[in-house]
Length: 72
Image (cartoon, rainbow, N blue to C red):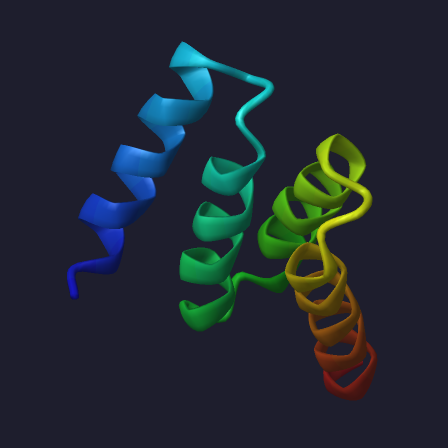
């Protein structure tokens, strides 16, 4: 998987529809795997804000927060 291409695709999806929560979650996942935790956190927060009932989004957010705390 080419992370840079995936990130660009998800960013384009967000530009086209800023209320499309899956694009934020997926872009967050990509940048998380690239080690860019603050960016991932923002995307996970937005996805969870847009779809607060989505357990996967909340788990991604919690996981990212935990990773950031361990790295600091």
